[in-house]
Length: 245
Image (cartoon, rainbow, N blue to C red; front, side):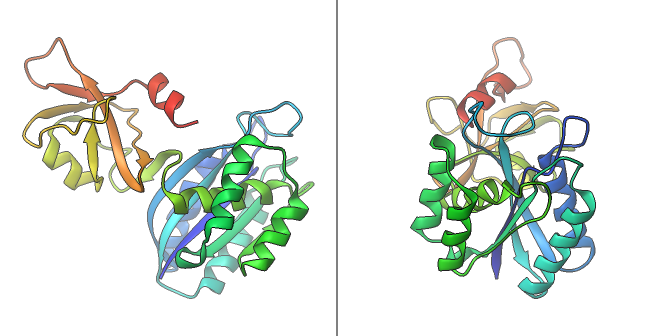
């Protein structure tokens, strides 16, 4: 069974961020035989001074395949957040079966990107749809963003990848087909959405972040003008951030 786990508001200005915590939680779930981590995605929510957040108001989702019970995953994730959430944080946790995440949850995710919404409404929506949602520290408003991340990840058209297998440790020059197979991504395209021929070469830098587009993992690249070894390189950090907010 596939599930989505999401966390939000786990950090303070001195601590490691929510993205790091999501990756670490996924690693621990695998090490303890509870789930196989498929990907971790960052989701940008509404950036508004009326909303309390640490730095960017982003949440993170973990897409996983269960290898134990969903209760075991929830219990383990709860213990992890209670232990690791930073002082002054408002941590929230949401865990949902992939097939049970419906359009109402997806719409909640979009609202969290454009509107100020409340934790009470988040709990009402989760209860109605039999989705686990709980806050642990501070004012517990992280439930808003964690529920939003579940919906946004299910839709598959939001955010940038923080982790997929081999992504963060892989750099160098690769044939397009080889890189897709190594990382496990569906598409590599230019900024206009044109897919790159499988036999051409790409240079992969240390900061390489695919995005979700049409529910597929897609790496955006740009033409390299100054190399005879490769035709393409990863799009710049600034560009990827601009299209994944």
